[in-house]
Length: 231
Image 1 (tube, rainbow, N blue to C red):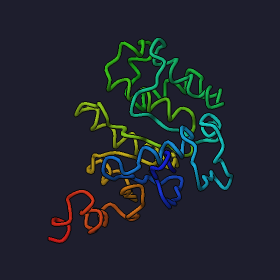
Image 2 (cartoon, one colour):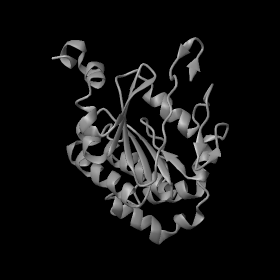
Image 3 (spheres, rainbow, N blue to C red):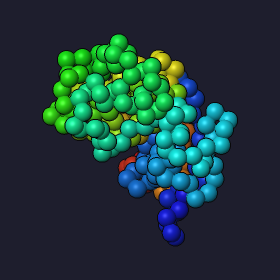
Image 4 (cartoon, one colour):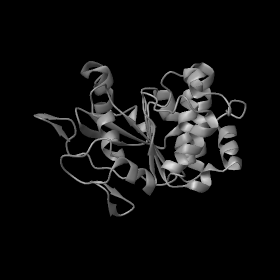
């Protein structure tokens, strides 16, 4: 993936599996958000290809990928702030083509999963940032995705809300959803992910378990510098 002469991603090739939570980490500017944006269709890759369950979706729009079962969140929330929590959750399913998921019973069940059952009639724009983040995650799940891309899901959450996050991500995995989590919180990555990918300057330098990642010389150098990696 290139922007003019700048190569943001080079030779990155990975596969995601349903029911597996994978972490994507790396220093600022390593290409993490660009990678997620290419997968979701927000950006179109300038080279290479993207396959979804064996089908080439490289030129698919973001909405077409969502309808195929690939959902994502955003670091900057994208909600209908003048609508209620209930309406936001229901709308996500309709945009993804899953009208049944807009039913009242299912919306209430999703709201309970994210601790929003007492806020379903509240206007989203009146909620705290943490509550709105949970509304966004509820919208993602209600679209019945097979794969979910979570870009900094803990951004803006307070301590109590961050403590709920591992359970929410684990719930996605238990439902058979393949999840890619991009976050700087290494404790979160170690807790919820069984696999970790590490990017550095647009290249994949590690693919393995969290325990192995935090002992890998290249990963340590990437975060701590060469002196610490060789100590």
